[in-house]
Length: 273
Image 1 (cartoon, rainbow, N blue to C red):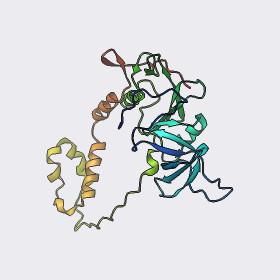
Image 2 (image 1 turned 135 degrees about the horizontal axis):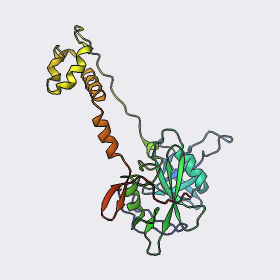
Image 3 (image 1 turned 120 degrees about the horizontal axis):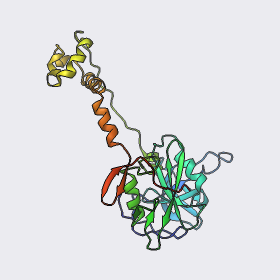
């Protein structure tokens, strides 16, 4: 995470942004309302602040480039890409359920049910909310067995292991809203001069991966790069189950116990907000 977030103020206090990369305004609802006129800014857009006009923001959309004014009640201030100030549970769910939002997308926001606390909202099969407690020494925790000096450390930890949450944290909410579609030049068509490839010989290639290149019995130049990649993918998918088993073992939930990690068959006591 860029810009370390060391002891943020309690919910309700104004947090000062520490850098431009992860600080923006998130649009909470279409503005103006579609009932009035075509919206200039739409829900989920990210805006860069131009000026604060006292209850109104002059801002520019990071996705469309449109510049206009928008009232403060229609936006939330976002710090470090994931710390949302000025939105409640319902609006958090609306943003996390927008199309193209990845599983594990998340945000930290002020808790509505417990004043003075934060909440971690995560998109899984549905949106899950976890209460973040704050100790007198300004350390934070979701599960009392594991505390963090700052919110950034908490985010970094749960971005590596789920450790009792519904899933690992993947990307901050609205990360995809400014992604420009990739422009790719069309590939030149590639044709085969003769059809001499025998799929029945594919199974034998698994037993001799080193000789796979020449076992096809045909000049490699006859195949497009894409076709060779497809063959390699096929071999990988039809390999024995040991590789899949290894991957499953690595993805098992881990919890910390002192300085050691160990597998756990139970979840720590987390409090849903």
